[in-house]
Image (tube, rainbow, N blue to C red; front, side, top):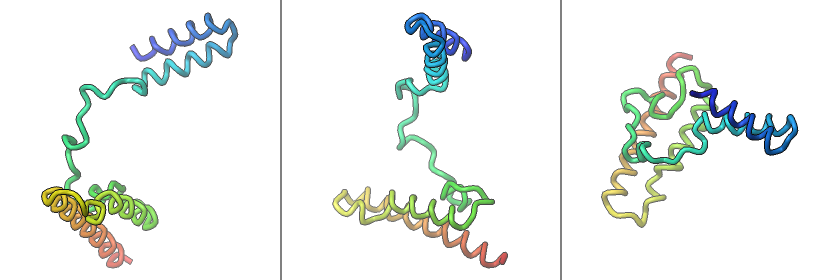
Length: 122
């Protein structure tokens, strides 16, 4: 099934452009279709319905691997905090602010745990 869109795209591109470059462009468009770049978001879980990372694993909470460098961990921490910092939700309702504060505490605790682990190992 996955090859079908590529081959079809290549043939249609070649026919429309009547040049080998059209076949290449059609093949690449078929590849993008197979990869799901043009699919609608129907049937996909909404961001709120997605499973939140497990808070027991600080690396997973920050979205980095255990072998990530400290620079990558710092970058991931800054990115996570920029999304959930309580100051971003200053004008939101109390429940939303409380969720943001809890998430920010979890992100900070994960970062602190990683830094303490790395300092203890060094």
